[in-house]
Length: 156
Image (cartoon, rainbow, N blue to C red; front, side):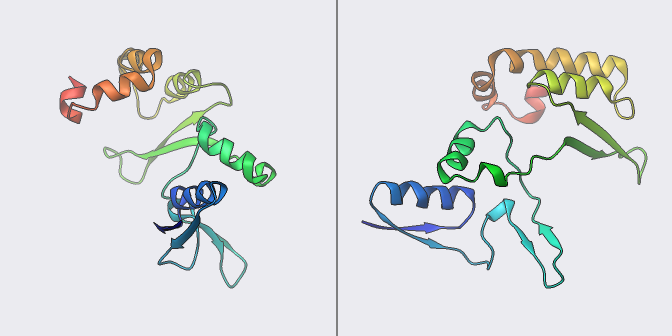
């Protein structure tokens, strides 16, 4: 069976791989001249690398890691330091960093929150940490249960 796939991002390319494994003929349609969608990277004419930078994938994505193993390209991964940088609206032109240490989640997130002194006060860190407890204990089940709320409702 021939199957058309719209987009050569991670989802489209992995879909094509698994369809091929199942004996089908995928036809991947991509409007850009680079593959990868929101995680695309390419070299320009001068040899400089560019990254789309719109999305990333983490080591906690088991399906993606499995796909990479099946393709035999684990040695090509370049894991980057896990840092989140935020613009500080009350101080234009300044940024605040959350540096996640190389320890298992969600503990790495707690450490990143506790280390940040530019953006969060200690009372805010405590409130933030308490608010994250249900998500840390329940994981995806909590995320799905909260999906019915708007952001402002969830904040209450």
